[in-house]
Length: 215
Image (tube, rainbow, N blue to C red; front, side, top):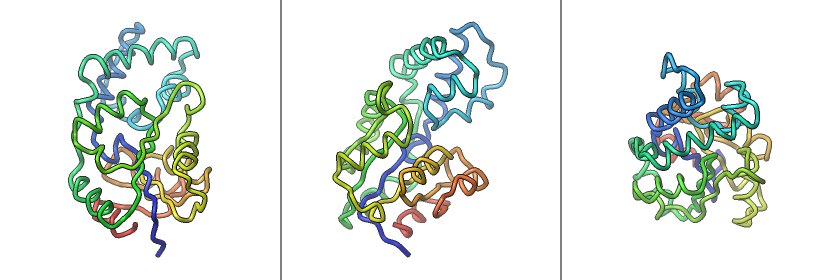
């Protein structure tokens, strides 16, 4: 079994259960755009993927309307407490502490923006574990693969076999495959075994302890 020196972690659905805040943020944005949300459960599929992809590809918004909707989403998520409608998954603190003590270099690689990411990491006391935080933006890091490449470059990681991506959704796994990294698909988040397997996950993990064993 491979062992890795660098471990890249997705944030939403992997380190923290941010579902309630994200679902409420989408509900708020969709309502502000003049549309009706009939079933919030249907919005759970938006936990993890990039905002623009969700608004444009899944909801069918034009690029201009997607930009407006994203601003409404961020209004709720960053300004109305949505980012703290959130909790750390069981075993994550212990996992990160153990990996850190073992000399692993830990990196956040998220499709969330910089502000929201830093608020969550600081609020829940997770920032201290990470050597680097790579976030998405609206220019050169819109896709998860862009975020991963940015993290690899900034951390000087040249041997791709020395790093692994941990995430809960198809976009985490497929981006890792695109870049050339192994991946661990976690089953306690918002993706299921079928989604993660079809995306090409190298390993699957039921719990935080499983991640530690694989790394």
